[in-house]
Structures are given as structure tokens and as C-alpha cells.
Image (cartoon, rainbow, N blue to C red; front, side):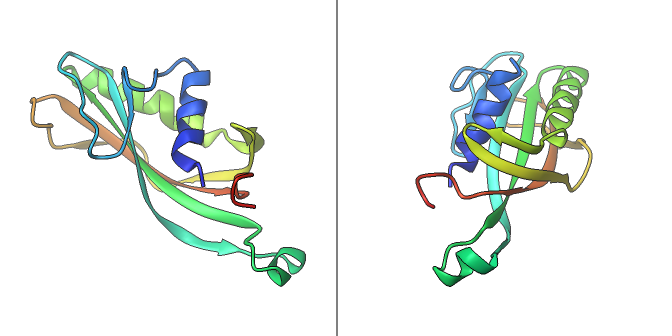
Length: 141
């Protein structure tokens, strides 16, 4: 449903990351060595979709509710926390607007950025999770 690519687009538009340079999708991403910050988008389970009268008749949800975990790595904890807050505020502000050509009704933050254990390269990790409510992308509707 292009949730991950939508998030990449949103972050790149705000100049807070460049895909495959310092912005990645999935826990399988090969995060480069270096001070960072490096951001990873991990799509998580989400919630049940919403139907509407018209769309329910043809079996298509009106809105889907994907979720994601955003993880920022950096050698300096304060750098990781600052980038996490920038991303948090960027995503929090998405209400009733197009993101990468798909209508997003809202985002709901499930927690503020928090400290995780260091990664395998001893860099600080700061994360937060959120849910979104959005239309299906055009490829699926």
C-alpha cells in the first residue's frame, strides 16, 4: 500500500534524509558505518481498516491504518534524539493532506521519542512509533 515509500517521500521532501544514503526501510537494511544520523523506517502491524457504505459494497476499505517504527542511529545521543524529534514533529503534523499522491487523514503518535539500546556499532538509537489513517494508494484501489 506504499506506506514505506510514502514515508520516504515525506522525509525527503522535508530534507531530513535521502533514501539509501541516510534513510532506510526495513530491519534488514545495511546501515553504513559513520556518525549518522541514520534513519530506519520499520513498518509494523497496523490496525483494522475502515469501510464506508459505498466502498464496502465492492469489498475495498475506505481507509487503511498502517503503523511504523522510526529508529534514528547516531554516534552522539543528542544528535539521534534531535533528528528523532524533527521526524516526530514532521509526521505528527500530517493531517488531511496528500502524501506522495495518497490522501492521509491523520497520524496518531503512540509515544514520544525514547532511548533504545545501542546498535551493533555502539551508536545510540532513538525510536518512536505511530499509526496512520490513509486511503489506499492508487495501485490498490
